[in-house]
Image (cartoon, rainbow, N blue to C red):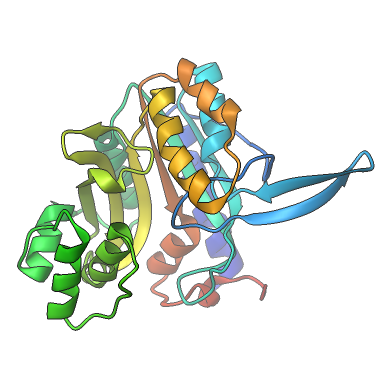
Length: 294
C-alpha cells in the first residue's frame, strides 16, 4: 500500500467534497489566547515570547471557537481541515496531535450534517447504508434500563454490570463508564448515527425539552464524528462555559461569547480524519497510517 498516495487522495477528496458544495475553506490560528473549554479534553498550554513579553497561550483542541467567530462575521457555510492538539491522549485510537475536519452550515440543524456525512462516506466508498438510534434506545438496549437521572441510579447499574467506579464521580463520568461499553458495539454492520443526547450532555448544542440536538457517528465501534445544532444565545453559552471555567480555573474567551450575538442559526460538526482513514484502509491502529513516527 502506498500510504503517501492514500493520504493525499483522501485529503483532496474530502476538500473537494465541500468545495463542490459551495463551502468556503477557512484557515484559523492554531495558537489561541484562550483555551477550548471541554470537560472531556485537556488543552496544551504554551509559554511564548512575543515582542519580548512572555505570553500564555494554548494550542487548539478544536477550531470551533475561531470558526464560529468567522461564521458570525461572514454568515456563510465554511469548513476547515487542520491539526488539533489534546494533552494526555495516546493509544491505538488517540494521538496528542491529529487531523480534524470541521464544518458549519447556516440555517441548518444536525440532521443536515448527518446528510452531509452520508454523502461524504458514500463518495469515500465507505458505505451507502446506515443505521441510527437515540442515546436512550442504545442505553436501554445495553443495560435493560432507562437512563437514570441521578448518580445513585447510575451507581446501581454499574454495580449490576460489575463495572468499576469511584464514589465521588459525577453523573456524566458514571454515565460514560457505562455507555463507552455500549459504544464499542455500534457501527459494525454499517455506520451508526447516535442521536439526541440527554440535556446534561449538551456541550454547546441546542436543547429542546430533555434532549440535546446532538449526534455522534460510529464505525466499527470507533467514534468518528461529533456534531450538533448550535446554541446561539450568548447568555446560555456563557452559562455553560462558566461551569467548566470554574471547575478547571481556565479563562473564558469573551470574544467567543460576544460572537454569538451575530451568530446565524446553524449547525456544526467535527470529524477525526485520522480515524476515518484508518477505518477506510482496514487498519486497527492510528500507528498504521502514520507517514513518519511522531
